Length: 343
Image (cartoon, rainbow, N blue to C red; front, side, top):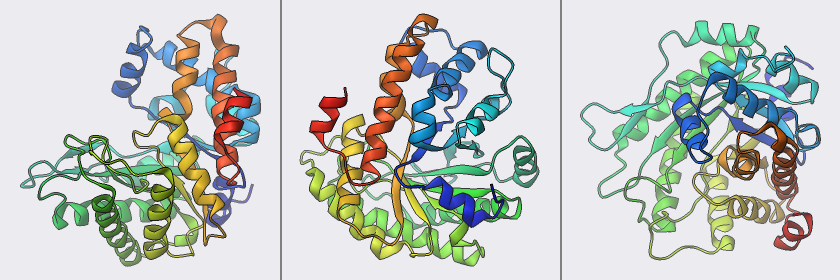
């Protein structure tokens, strides 16, 4: 494959394919494993990721790239094959999470700023040598009374832009992920409040990307959908979520960006798929719209696997089903009827 950043970015949003977020930190994967009463050991984590990456139909037909955690990009499958090589052989692109997590922002109570810029250039060089061709950095924006502040939005947008520039210098496509949370501590905001905060955030992010000289053709945006908070008294219809999400993207995202890969952000598996499909069905659009889901692609597979080797085939079938449904959604061709027929 060409090492040109724009070519890699285009391959990441290939028709009918999306990105598997398998970059759960050690703490997050422990919570997932707790749900199936499985101890989170390095071997268990390796076996779980190997189960996903070995789902040939899903990986070859519906997955364009996989975001990995630092531990995972260095691991080998049980037979000694590097996990990165498994991903490559399936025709997908290996990627890496590089941020150090959202930390409390000094003098901004209730707000976070993502850390991890120190030494990032050197880490990106190593990750490139290990096979990564794209990276991910997540910023979180919470909605509550008086929040978010301009200071927090600006600090996170600035960090995203500095990260993106460092990625591009090192031959790595940055996924720029500013997430306005639907499931924060309060999460009682309506869809219009989410729209306003998402618009503010995206405009600030693209301003900072411009100042940082980031090549928009060699990046992918990973935003939230415009959706009411999980505790809101009024929940918007799928049609309204799709309409308002497209409206804010058209207002804020330059057409030079090759693609937008949504996070699921606390939506149910089927909600995230349905919303994506409705947006694609409303095309044509200036950019590709696809998925970059973690839990929404993995939850059914994790439950089916349960940490047992004899369940690997059933787990891969569950993963393939969700990947296929999202692949259809990336073309605007998903429906609940297809969901039932394929289940």
